[in-house]
Length: 390
Image (tube, one colour):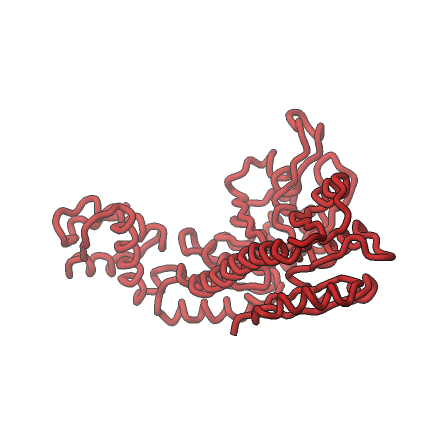
């Protein structure tokens, strides 16, 4: 069942209001409600109408104030202004408030109103269709990048499902190339924050002297070269998720600042004195032994326990033997599609060679080996000689 288009009619002339309702009620997609005064209208604006027709010249009505309230309380509502006053200054003022539909009260008003509503309904329908498509896409792609059928992968998926709907901080542990970023994405894109930003920060890839500014932002003049204000990655991720990859590489001097952000959900830009409130979920990942770094005095114990709200350990590929050929065939098809090449398959000997390798570089190494084997091969079959490892 399609959801109805909710239309509020704010008009103090009872006959005129009923005439609008009678005209629009011919379309069974509309749910129509009449209000004869702005007080009752504003009491019901929380019901989030899709369209509002508003008599700008109602007695006791400040049209600008009502429009501001609509914009504040129901920003997705499309207002249509009907006015017996043809004043250019009023039109300009309404345009500044984001009103696109302004209709003078005359013999053509109802025809123009029908046209305006038809245009707005088309916009709303397109917007709703897009939202449905986004939801379906997110649902379909929920775990498509986490490929495999081994018990280790099924256990991993169960852990993701347990934590994805919560706001727990997550610490992902795994060797290089195991797919820690894919797990972080799976958690975010099926969480309640899925329509908000997913911001990735590789702690190992940013020079130490720039990392504080990168994470927390800076004000103009905070340091040499800071020619303008810059918001940090935490602010970018507000209401969404920030993924801190290679958290074990974080300089010890910055760890207290990160701890404060996690504890208090506030950030202070370099060179600034104002605390900025945040609502950010943190997912961190590492290939390091953090407890060992804590023992060595290289990682703060309190930060470690703060990050470790929920721990997920990704198994290395050598513990996922059943998945090697599944992954190899996936990477093969994907690479052939991107290269617009004809279909190829692995020979029996090539499969045996893939299964015999221990994959110290994990999934990343397997993907590279498969793509290289395609380039080395001739014909439709990839031989064991086409498969080699670094």
